[in-house]
Amino acid sequence: MTSSLYAAEQGVGSKAIVLLHGFGGCHDVWREVISSLAPSARTLAYDLPGHGLSLDFPAAGPAKVAAKAILADLSARGLKRVHLVGHSMGGAVATLMALAEPGKVASLTLLAPGGFGPEINGPLLRRYAGAADKAEIQACLAAMSGPRSPPSERIVDVLCDMRKRSGQSPKLVEIAAAMTADDRQGVIPRDRLEGLNMPVMVVWGTDDTVLPFTQADGLPAHFHVHHVLEAGHMLIEEAPALVAEIIRRNTNRRARPHRLKFAAAAS
Image 1 (tube, one colour):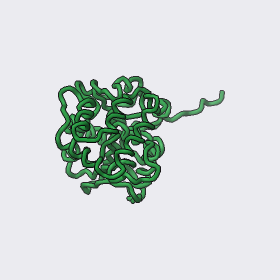
Image 2 (cartoon, one colour):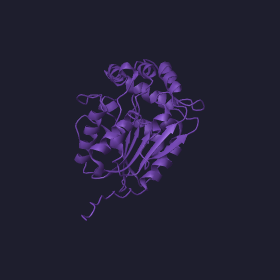
Image 3 (tube, one colour):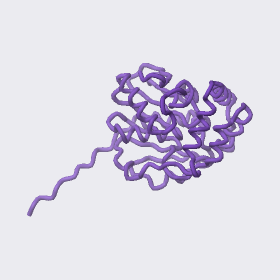
Image 4 (cartoon, helix red, strand yellow):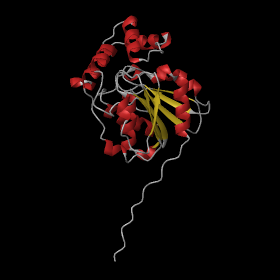
């Protein structure tokens, strides 16, 4: 395994599901989703570089650094093919992983993924990065969640405890500043997405205040898009059972056949 990159592993099934949290989160936000998945599923919930137990990963911050690190870690674990699930920043990481090594990705499930459009709520994310106490963390999570989904006490405590680690809060502030420079985010070119042949599911809450759900418009025709009514950005916490069901369905789908191009016969 890659040094200073942490993953919580559960289950012993033949199907490996890799879970990547969003900015400011950690592996433990997936607890309810994992408990709703089939017990035979093998899950690896990572702490992204710069977060939680992966805080000290070198050059942590950019999604491309995380993508490269996790791909290397999966190879070190001997995992040749995995199902990728990513939320927000973790969705951008998962997409970059699939673009870099498509043969390693059996399916791609993206929850309000980063990098699908330039719009981003920079002020809210920077506020969240700098949240110094439980009340402020809770207020930020509430602002990022749907109107009927107040943040759970457990999640607030998990994220509060994570930030108590020396250096964690300054690192989040640093990442947020880079990620939301000029209140825009980097965008993954749409033409690159067309080449992804694995099953792809994109899930977005219609009340997302961080990344507008309209960023799911105009995606390649073979991408499946699912809008969750009255849900906000924090889909893992707001609808864990639904997220688990979507993961189950997408990991059971088959990849679309490769398009073969034949040269026209000479007349």
